[in-house]
Image 1 (cartoon, rainbow, N blue to C red):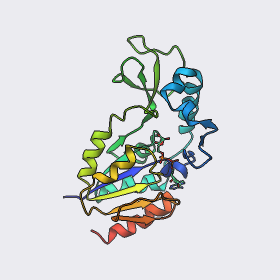
Image 2 (cartoon, rainbow, N blue to C red):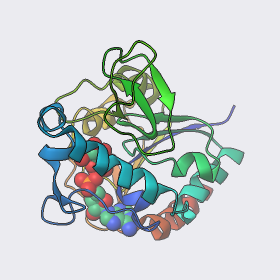
Image 3 (cartoon, protein in one colour):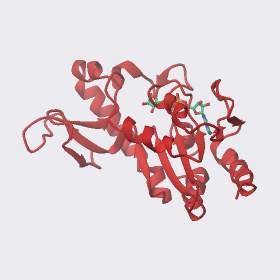
Image 4 (cartoon, rainbow, N blue to C red):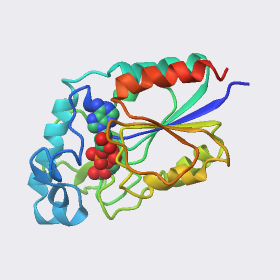
Length: 228
Ligand code: APR
């Protein structure tokens, strides 16, 4: 049976595709205070600003491509049973060809009803005030904002509990519950953490690969060759 590799990805894996990370530029995200554009309070205060912000992100997503790190993770499925648990709302893992992806923080290319969180629908155009679900509620981006529940976290914990190897790529490990996932892997599961500026992680099992996602993933593949 193939070994199970769980890969936890963050904004850093998409940086080389041209999508900015959240915390690399003075706490601003594409020029915005995160609290204004990524909280339920921000949406209540200025829904048009928030919708416009995600419209821009959705449009930008159409202009970028998966990079070699996304592609290498997809190719890893030839040898391993791979599950990607991503904090990213882009679809670059999907476009690279990965098959098992859990989006912890939602997806840019979907929207959902403000009246029914289960009413989620694909959405590739701009979203405006007045765009309603079938029950007549305003639609909102299908994004987990700060302060909101992370509905997929239970599934992600179960996935981590069956990991033979955990790989972490391009995340500052600042945002919980995602950052706590490494505590759920079985004891002695090797953990590889690829990031040019990794956070300090108090876990003995962690091998640091202090490189960009594309460079670091190359190193990882070499290290894994010795394990098969
Ligand atoms: N390759 C790999 N990692 C990189 C690269 C790169 N080319 N460039 C930057 N990084 C790293 C940074 O060093 C940092 O550790 O990516 C990480 C990005 O961290 P954050 O911006 O905090 O992004 P992330 O950890 O994904 O944020 C988590 O916070 O704002 C919320 O919901 C949002 O999902 C997001 C969550």
